[in-house]
Amino acid sequence: MYYHAKDYEGHFRFTEQNNCSLPGNKNNCTGHLVDIPCKWYAYTDSQIFWNEIALDKTVPGKPNGYSSSDFYQILAASHATRSPAMFVWWYPTEIIAKYDLQPVALPKTTRECLQNRPITGDHDRCDAELSVLRGKQVGSCGYNAHELEKVLALTLKKNDISVTNEAERSPAYDMLRNIRISDFDMVEVLAEWDSRGIDRYGYDPREAVCSWVAANLFENQNLTEFIPPGFPRKIEDFSYNDNSGLLPGALVFAFLAVAVVLSTATITALYRKQKVLQYAQLHFLALFCVGYFLVAIGATILATAPATATCMAIQWLVVVGYTVGIVPLLVKIYAINHIMQQAKRMRRVQISQQRLLGQVTIAVFIIATFLSIWTALDPSKKTEEPILTSPEGTVEIQVSCSSDSPGWEAVAFAWEGIYMVCAAVLAFASRNIRQEFNESHKIGNMAYSHSLFLVLRLIVRYVLPYAGMHYRKVAATTSILLSADSITSLSLYFLPKFLAIRRKLKRGKAENSLQRSNLFQHRAYNGSSLTMTAIGASHATSGFSAGRGVDSLGDALGSARSSASRSQQEKGQVSFSLADLDVGSSKLDLVCNDKSENV
Image 1: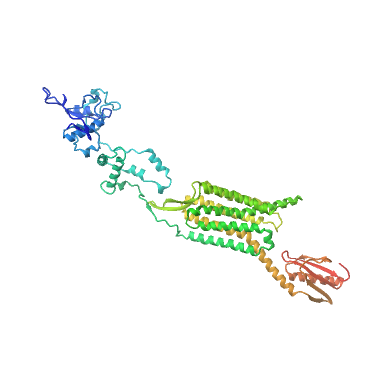
Image 2: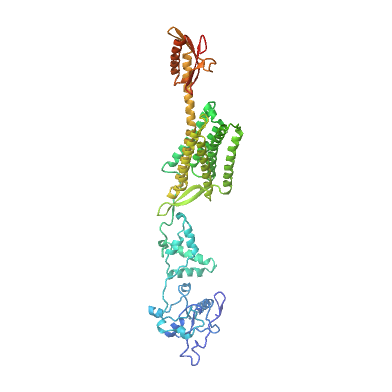
């Protein structure tokens, strides 16, 4: 058979060197050796010459010898025609498993032999002299056995190092570094590759490797020995519940903050006609309650499991809530401070309510625009991140809210810091304003309180996660801080006003009771008559004012009796009128009228 299109094109023939039937060639004929291409390094000339192997590797018409394509065709033809052939080829190779080949044993390899190998420059044997190729006899031993070398792409290591999250890192690079494969294993892989014949230089090598790995993963070679520690990963079933009770506690505290805001708004509405609330401007108080109500709602949502719809909603509620709650107070304090400063210069100032509310609207519009851009370009959304929780490879999927860029949230925190600085500055500048209008002390305390909570939130957000705190604990702690901030701010601002209203109402009841019991009472002192009349509306227009600081209506009456006794001794019978009692300032004004003349 001279031709088989699938395997080879050609046939074997005799040459002058290997045809032993020629006259005179019986004792010196040689066999033919199929050598590897002369561009590849080999020591064939030295081995066949010094070991007296009667083979010739000359190829008629091909001074550089056979090509690799020729080699495979000759091998296939030899197998198909059952013709003996001698080859020089590398090992391991797929042809060992495909064909029944027998290796030729050459002299044992020694260190001395390796040191005396023929030197052919860059192993190019095509143009080298025959004497150089033969070299010394001591260098004609067999080839030295060597381990297979692994070649790994540099990008594989770079990609492995670039993964900062240990839970997401692939074991591929470490496993490839650890794995050891023998020549026999490589022969099996190459044989599988050669047998497929579908996509020889495309998909077939990949499929051959995968098939061999599947067959040797647990048996034979047992590749599991090369798997790095901690692999394969063990994924835990994720639950957002916190066994420490921090999340339920945060949710209860958030509900408490909502209740405090609603209670504050209700009390403010019930006593809206009280002067202390009128002076504070009811519409600003309403905005204050609305703002902290939004913050409390944000704290409530933050204490629940993250969802795509709620992640960005939390940012809107908290940032807009603080803006609506605090900026109106800053605008009011600034306006009052401006009025007082202009009054010192004897200048008339007109400030409309619409202008003040317009300034608040501008601040809300600015932050709403920022939040809208944030929502459109890079919204905070639900993300799942694997977290390695143990060296044994246990991985927990952490669900959290985050944007691709951390800069958005940093700007939101900076916005809070700006109006906290403004609050502190305005509180200090307004410290000498009349007390009925001055809220600098309350605003200052609120600024310091909110600044403290802001710093704590920054620590929880940017420091504790790097210390290993889980996101659910970070969210629960942040929710508690938001709730505590809301309750503290409402208490610092509204509680003194509510207590003042309570004291005033109590004193008002006591005043009305005493006025009813002492109305039109007459007493005689040494024949003289003293009449005490509770009028309670306006001062008398005649007489003189004998007022002094007193603590109660009883003290006021005692003072009146003493004044009456002295007047009786000096002028005779006199009459006193209790004209006005201002409980809030604890001052009593008395008007004395003499019967005969005005004193």
